[in-house]
Image 1 (tube, rainbow, N blue to C red):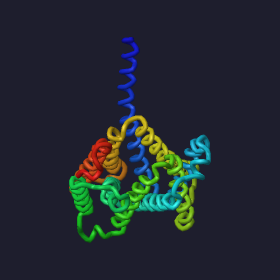
Image 2: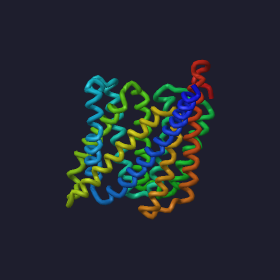
Image 3: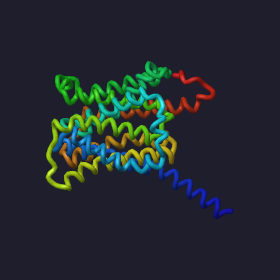
Image 4: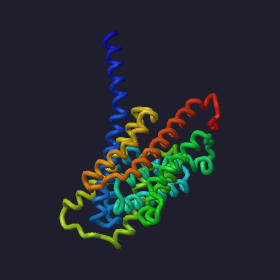
Length: 307
């Protein structure tokens, strides 16, 4: 009996470690994907990069889809909402890779990490969710962080900065639409997302195609899709191993990796205003997340409009 108890305790400790470790590895893979994307779009066409990335990721996803069968795809819920999510996700991918062509990786990642704040701000209007004064305060602080990061001046109206903001809003609406599609399997959502990006890449690639002179160049472009798909799988696995309250806040390690990779590979030195704005955004995002988790636990006893 004592041996069984010890084995259960050890398994519990390993399980508690596995979730965060898997999430941290997933965030590292996402950051690596972003750094690779920044280098690739500087040397190859944007449509070309997105097209080959999508094809490679689809090849990785194909066996899982084959095992799951066609029913979840053919009978996917709410086709119009699915189409809207694909549109937003495609916009987000193109905006992100355009932004990292011209801006430091850490700056772009900071803008993207503000997306949960936009989701919280838009959810009362679009999803009918109640948001109390505490979360509204956090939302306002997050918006201040975005403004500080942008450094209000004529520079904030440059095309890369504008595209960054458009991309973060597209990402936020992609997350919002995902909340309305909880009945759709993750693999189906990823499939539609990849198909949308791939078709858009196919449309734009002929206008900005850089000839590939060796198999290694094609392999590097395909690796981008493999790394991105691996990151998605790791994050989904982490959320199945551990509860969201344990692993979701670890998404903000993306910013740390973006700073490190930006400095190592591109010589980017973080601005003080970016760091301060990022601190406000991360703090606000974490407060909103933990507040929502707290309210979910109270839901059986108290309504969600508790401030």
